[in-house]
Image 1 (spheres, rainbow, N blue to C red):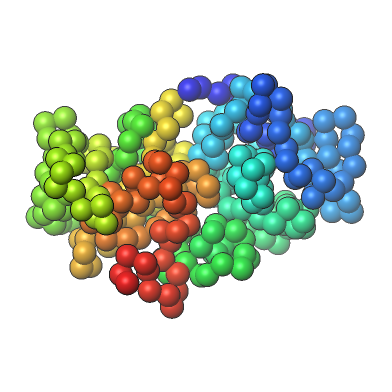
Image 2 (cartoon, rainbow, N blue to C red; image 1 turned 45 degrees about the horizontal axis):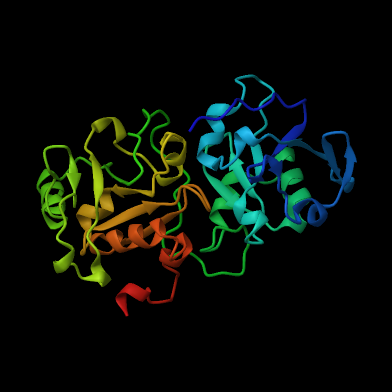
Amino acid sequence: MSFPQLPQPAPGEVPLICTCYEDDKALWGSLLDEIGGRREDDVLVLGDSGVRLHLVEGSGWNYLHGGNVPALVPGADLVPPVVVLADISVVYGGDGPLLVDLGAIPGRGVRVPSARLAEILAALLGGTLTFDDLVHDMDNYGKYQGDGGRPAFPAPTTPTRRSFPALPSTDAVLLVRTSFDDEDGWRALLDELGGADESGWVGSDLDFDDIDPDEFPLTALVVDDRAFEGLAPGQVPALVPPKEHTTLVALADARTFAEPDRPLTAVDLYDTPGQPAVLPCRNVGSMACNLDISNMDFHEFVAVEGVEPWWEE
């Protein structure tokens, strides 16, 4: 799947992109009513905030995800620091719109309450609020100042590197090594996951008669390349090619080799791009399976401060 380039916004405008369509008709759900404002052609002016949303419609952006947005924005000085997506979670799930970072860590996202969109965008554009502030103060559902629990493992906001190559295109899971200080630990991790075959896959030859459904084996394409050393969760969504619907990316980072249970950092690519969930490697296969069949949502795997995760009960 490929997407057309997004239109160049006028100075001071923030694109509001519809990414959900039926018979080529844009579906906004109740979002436009909830955020209010007045229409000026294809621009929505939000009250006294001064925020101008440029409404972007076109079925070519159907199923566009937050991590794909940075590659579609025209490379010019007029690029805004943020874009807003009205996606399937807004239209059918009643969630708040997804704000996508184009500045500090392009491609990561945070959801905000629809009624507060004008206020939050005005603060971002005015410099009194940063995207890092949004990330620091989001709940386990990925919503800024939401009423869910505080994530036990907050998303890092200060990556050590800025430039990484694209990740391989796959409709499965990617297991990406980001820490290279413990070669024995890496080999032990691969062994615990069943070993990698000659094509670089773990769990590719499963015997379903021997599978424990509570600890479903992980099937993943292994990426063992120093080009991804230091890769942070928030940087992952922009590196995932849009051609295939990758289930998730699991990072084998420094925590993996320093803590019991060899925890992996799974990264959300869709609901709240860049949000991490840290869980023992033995549980990541079950997570991937449940996400793939839409049996569970990513936020159900995000450990919450002071609450024992369900996989530890």
